[in-house]
Image (cartoon, rainbow, N blue to C red; front, side, top):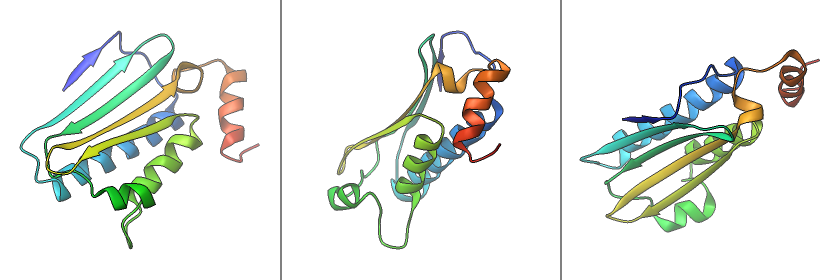
Length: 129
């Protein structure tokens, strides 16, 4: 695990969604990838929070990546939906028998602890008033 930048307090709602995304990525790497190594990187910078999970496992079948899910499984699709919900993006790179890398990027305005007005903007995305 590697942390870059100065750890900054996170908006609790966005933090929880990011936690769920990272947990799902780690769970997939452990359960499905048969990885010998898993790397986690957290990068705090002034423009965004970037979380990266990479492994040297079996990779994801390109057909699954194209469909964004394996029939009966919703991990990738769910991670993308959570990322979008908090104003972020989720990128997935994978090669069979080489490994997978998943990167979550969330803009600073959404993720770092904020003013009351900024929190209101994030809450409105969750359908709360």
